[in-house]
Image (cartoon, rainbow, N blue to C red; front, side, top):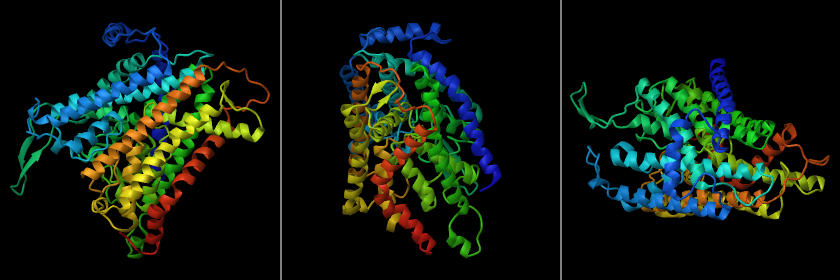
Length: 567
């Protein structure tokens, strides 16, 4: 670990904090129906889309109607994307002549991109046509991210409104998220990436002759536009198999910093949106503070583990950080920071091979996802995820002082607790049950690339990544098999929609409650005590749930590494 490395980490954190307030103010204005600089251009388009959907911005929905519209929209998106992949070979914009994608892989990919997971059991440049990349995958990158934003906004309204029955309109929230936030930012980011050297072309792949006289095909395509939304929408699916380790997706340290900021920008700004819409920005800063503590702790551990490297190397007199599986142009610090960011958010883009990290370096990305990716998290998804933990923390605080718990004047009662616990428990259900089965199923074990605890970590990481809607891979696991394509797809569905529905049910319950004025016995939720309680709740729930599984994987691997054994 070096001073220069920590300065790079602090620069990232500083820029991110500077972005939170202006971006939060803009987003709050958008979802409150206020005018923005883009309104003269976008309002006519917005109203036209409402007409197509048969709604308008003044029509609001009960939470059940909101949830039904969301589910039907996502079901349709899954079916359309599945069909596009199955008939890819006869669709246009396929200069490389890519064949149709198989049924299990099509199911896995369609579910993956609709669920904002972007798990990829395939190599993008060798499997997907330009049409599939642009019309199929990139479109879902936008609308899946907008869906997460819409749910978070609906939950914020439940706290900000004194009483009522409606939580907003799904079509309006999703449209505004796409038109006013995601699309304009992605246009700007696309132009920046092209300027930095990222390809953006519909031309065919280029054939080249190497210095040794061998023939090589250089894959190109509309990379910059997909790169922009993959990061900003915390989707993470790479145009190329190597993802953000590929020089065409991540040319240099400037593009690397922009990508890391893009992953966190909207998720971090949501805390400010929350504070503004509930009328107390200190509430948002308190939530961001809890996220920040967990994030800095994770970065510190990974950076320390990767800088210290493997003690077995030191025994042979080899010094230096662990550079296995990392790009030289990013080094240990930026690879470690990127790994923590992408797993703290539900992004899944990678600029290094996580399976090549040390045991403790790979442990933190696993924990980040298993905690529900509430450390900033995905766009919208991270915010409604941490609200679930806030409900549990507030309930525990209420029990300790012997009074009915409340948050921002809304009483937290049995119904909200049941829904919060249900949403949180669905993640370990998908992660651990599928991992247990795959660990003893011969056909599933055959896909593991490494023996011992590292091989177990490969399986655990895959199902954790799927259920957490992250999409990053540990590496070494051959996931393009019928078993993994189907079960990982099921894990993605569980991790996405078994959290969304309880979250919306909580919103529907809270919006109907009258706001109770604060009293002398009200637990303050904008100070250090609340931040500590929230961090403690997250760590205790995560530790009790996942430590036995982690002990079988990275913890054992670390202890065996110290003893001189590797895998």
